[in-house]
Image (cartoon, rainbow, N blue to C red):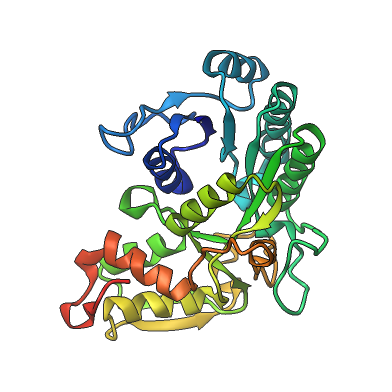
Length: 315
């Protein structure tokens, strides 16, 4: 089928677009960042420009592409930027989502909307399921929650898919926690600091893409959590990275969120742990344990950093 995909120049798009193309779909990939028009290589689709905040551009894109399906990845994902400029966050994450959902509803086109564990307040003891009520504590989480509501209201055939802490993209696209650790190692740091007072569920983009394609094929619409299995803190993730890379020469120091408060002042939930209950109940959960997925990612994207004696067998 013909898929119109928004916001594909980032981490998730780096895995999802090739996966959709490999599955035989015709992908019209778009973004506002055209720094690299062929981020998936010459065999992949050329990246086209689309600003999802422009209602005229959205209508024109639907008229020109005439998609059978839409995957809506475009979003403002920075908590700090969202808190500093709420109007921008709501325009990008809620209003733009409404514009796309309305076009899908009018044309009877199914849509995937990528949401976040950040819609929860983090106070629950135990992991969040799809049956727990959202209660965001920052602008980013609230704007994504509003986007979920727009999709529900305007696009009857929808998949709302909440992801956890994103892992993926490789050296070119990874701008999250794993890349922060890897970059510090490349710089020659011998002491690293990682937060140990916030819990979450890492989500490997390659596993996410495979699981999402399987879900789309099912045509079982609805709300889904899609994160790797298990839980951990940023400290746990950093410790696993060092273990996989064989870097027992690094001093990893566990700190609280206050240590990075100047760089990351926005409120973050204590817990963003999710379980994929809706997928489990329907036998569609393909997500691996996060440690296994992280090991796979490091072996395939950062193999040059692995000390040979620690390499073992890639998963």
